[in-house]
Length: 179
Image (cartoon, rainbow, N blue to C red; front, side):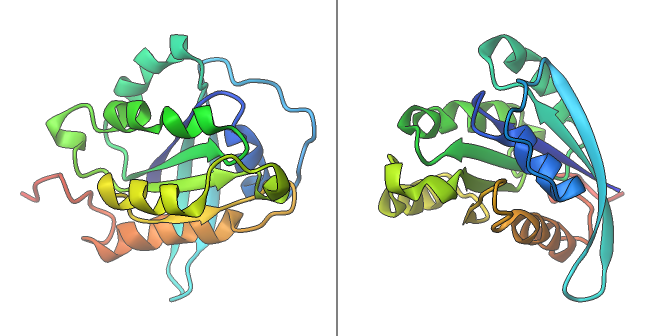
């Protein structure tokens, strides 16, 4: 069982992304997450391994950010989402990374960056060169553009994160000492 954190500003599509992943459905009118929610799903990796995921979904509004620190404890990885059509959601990513890596224990937490709403690319405000630089500067494990509406890269991005966790101590977080 892997614990994954789902984070990012409110309205970027975090819950829609998880609903698409767990049910295959896209719900046009989704309500904002109040506090936290969680989803569970099994995932099969390309090498025939599989993992059971518990994904904690956090409300992106500022008033919920303080509770995030307590939920990060024991996490194996994190998804960090922004909306490619809202530059402000990209600008706020450093703040989210600071929260996700707020303690020395969490400093090596693998974080995968996801740009949401790529089905709306004609109104894009965040461009690939900015994203590439950000991923490198922040030592993130990768980047995917996703669409909960079409399903593009939803499962693939989670497979990437889980495969990264498997490849680094077979699910034992890198930052935890092995007795």
